[in-house]
Length: 121
Picture 1 (tube, one colour):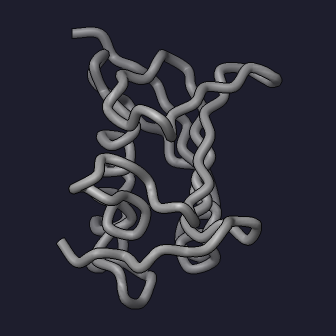
Picture 2 (cartoon, one colour):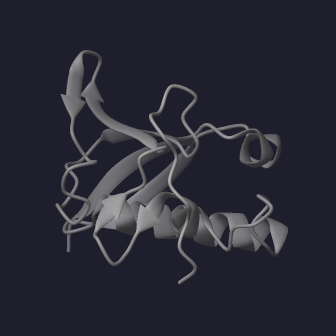
């Protein structure tokens, strides 16, 4: 099975204190943005033993509404294939990612519209 290389950047102070470099992930060729976030959560848990942002169980819990299959309004997320080439990963979280994509995730975007309450799942 082919692998997809993903560079994953999380812009959140508590996470950045622990992980200064982007996450370099290898996904299966059908891997999605949700799979990438799960792998980031595994790396965080492996290093810290628990999610470092108070009030959340994981990065996935912090950014994704599972019952509506979407990211919360306050989450900023974008994919880049190369400089100037954007990939909309927000609209279809279950779409397979292409190889050599860079994902930028801001769990609590400063310019977002009204924030939503995170559901407990």
